[in-house]
Image (cartoon, rainbow over all chains, first blue to last red):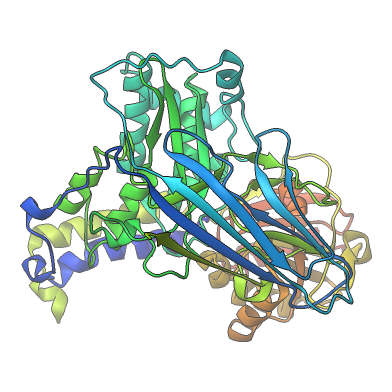
Length: 373
Length: 175
């Protein structure tokens, strides 16, 4: 999330230097033995995940319209089982944006509605993903689809500073895989996860690059991957979703800590490589491991980070559910402007859009669980 | 003192790093001439729902400051912005703080902890901000009494310092 400050950089510099300055005993930090560190998602058994979203009108102000994201991605790693909804809304129905196929539950409440609540429960099957880079796929994506995922969006332009940066990063790389890997490594090496970024970030990659402050969260860092790839002619897309359960590989930072997942939204990226089809990537999660997995200071050279870095170019653990890959989305039935991406519940009333990153005042809550029986 | 135990090489690294950061970011708060053309329209509600437009402040210098509660540099520069407003007085200078896409409850909580008296407007869907600036926060536009944008400041700035005093004084009508 771009902000720009002399003070900020001074603090960042101090923060980088401080642990060394006080001689923090690295050996005393809790850590797993190198042999115990495994992060290796592989396609295997399917698991069933359930996401429940509850919305309540907190302050009735004219008609309140609500859009709740529904898992809309159906592939060889995710299948929607069903959606159920209930509540006292005057209108409740599934709608789609018509461009990206992003499905959502639309609910509408009149000002005098006496039961202003809607609850949505979605059940999804998922299994981990891993790309075998030693084998070519026979899958060929539709050329129009590939062309579509080269297009710029409001938040992901592909010209100007984005193209200039992408060309510099990939100048020595030959072929789409080498270029995509160069972009991935550059993001891991040059950005950082900024814990103060609100939500998952704005995702405005031009502002990110122009500010020179390459800090952000998944919507910033993975959007940067998408934009830099598109800028050099490699189709790529963001997928917006939510972490539902903890990581089976023991990474606290790569899973939902509890069943309360109201603030567990996470987006990932895919890049289309001629030899391998759509390849899952997540450089933002590498930076998340750097920041959150163990007490600071942690660098990309830490064994915990080194275990995930090569894997997150090509593999995803599917303890996460994808909602959609929509950008510049016009909410069906809304009078307001398009949204940059659709990862959080959205609502508007007579006074305009509600703050989707303030769930307590919005008001919504989400829970997630694995159904094992 | 804990720093005295710092190895010499680490101490040197810290000094070099801090100096590099200072050099890199000193440009952040620079005042630059505005080259973006005509002044975009602005019509946004304050925290009580009253709509404000730029036209109502014609004849005064207006500083339009784009900010957000999560933005530390925004918070850092707000006190100096208030001091500047107090120094010139409301008949000469108006500060409009345009909050980016946050709700009134969150903004009110922020202002309880970071009190300012200048007008806060809410850009709930981000449309106004997008018309004015690249989404880098804070960014401030300095508008002359004739309603034309004259200068832009990207990054935080010491608004109550002599450089800003001189600039605003130059923009004000001669009496």
